[in-house]
Length: 257
Image (cartoon, rainbow, N blue to C red; front, side):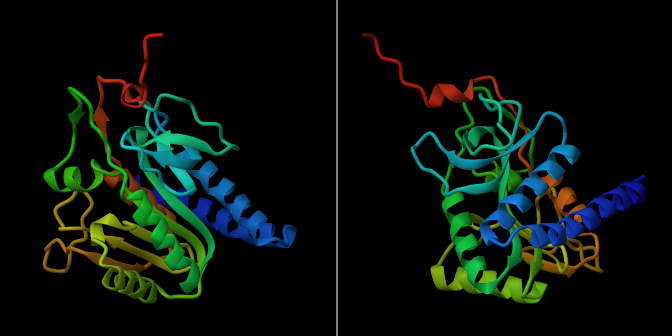
């Protein structure tokens, strides 16, 4: 069953790669190309994610007034108070966001830095779980993904190999002094492979070495089934909770006139 799913998603990945060539042949402006690819990827997620989730794009805010930058992909839960308009940017409440990320046609050294800065801005947001909320998670993921949702980068191509991408991320961490878990959580490149930060190695998503030990921190792998790995990772790390307090209650202030 798993092999059949991998094969199906592999066909979708091949179609997405073909769409890149089609979009390049159609549009001359890089902004038009980027917008088209973002739409292609959001539509892919709508087809493969559970029906309780929706996919949009825009900015994310928290109840303390912090705000992300423009975000290419925002995955929302059934608890999010407003529906998503597929083709228009929206404003999202972080308590109703399960994951977010950036889409690139070609991930370069230069735009990787700006992408990492975007991830830092997103990771300053904080989820207010609300009264009586039930959280289904181990302690590692609860600390990491239930305070701020996972954030990813997905690119069609890159001028850097996977090792180079990981080195750039680690270099950014060293130069900026950023906490590694308050940064992008994973990078996926369709023509290269993936690099994932497995945190302390105790989360639901693990990388196990040849001795059967869970490996912490960043791990990179070349892969010809990147979309399958992406969906597998995303399914494991997206927060899942049962809320009883409405999300919007933290954002609204009513006054008696």
